Image (tube, rainbow, N blue to C red; front, side, top):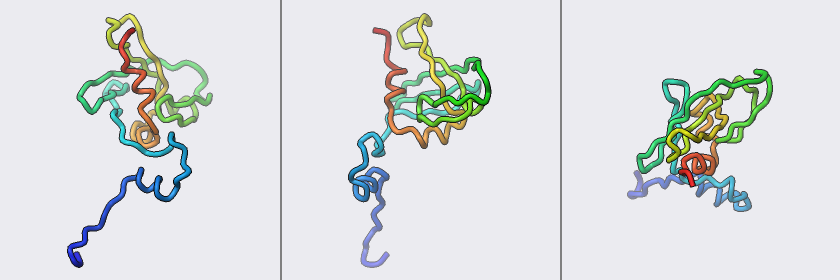
Length: 128
């Protein structure tokens, strides 16, 4: 290094705010409190930074394979064959209530496209 200067790295959020100040707030990258990973049974595991987990179990998907659907997590649309139908038990319901969603089969790409935690926040909300 020349003169002790360390090159500064910038976050995606800082870059967007600096070079594209008119970007809608919804599209500005922000840290996520959740991560989604693939489970061995074909489902997903939603993990909160605090350590809590929620399992999304795969369920049969009906309909034409070529029909277009939209991912509830990243809002990407494509043919049904590229998505999984999943369900999660509503926390505190003792297995009596479930929440359902459609998610991309490519978990890594879905996580890269996901803009916020809104859908995941609704999934983990306990019974009223």
